[in-house]
Image (cartoon, rainbow, N blue to C red; front, side, top):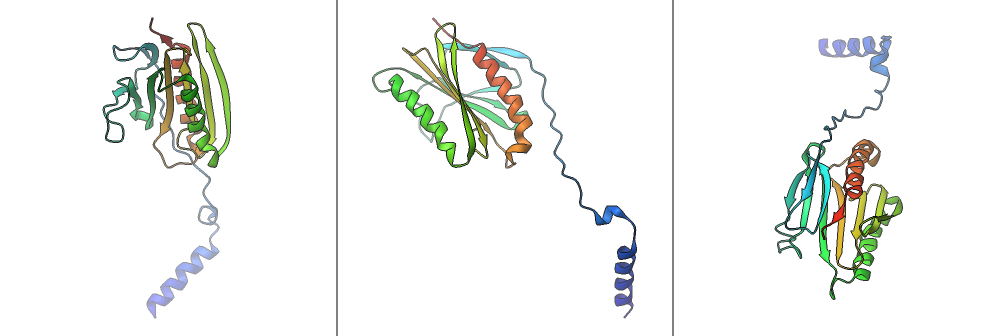
Length: 197
């Protein structure tokens, strides 16, 4: 009987309280994201026929296996940003009889369009720079695996494809600041990109 009386008293106390904290829902909150400082370093390796600049908080990881097989080319790598739990996967193909320019461009558009199932929309922007650097950027909005993709080519010998991945189970709107920050990094990479002669 004492326990019942105590429970009724507690319920009565909270029901009659003017404490708004107990009665109102908490506002939405988003985690605070600490972005690293950008200091650029040169990507200039002996296993890739190009160079560019990228932030030094990214770790260059050369691919050694692709689905338990050797990658098609030794110039497959990831730029891993552990601080933001993301990576940019880059795969290079020399243009030849098996990897024609038309095939590589079609593959790039096909892979970006696979996101149409979950994407709200896809913006496509052409790239044309000095030094025979051409390509497209695919800016994909929505709950997709890879929200930003691109390809670069000189249209005769070289083809590079890149895809950004963020390892998180969060809604796209809460990842938007991270995505915008990483997108700036990729745009800097594209702006400073050069084919090696």
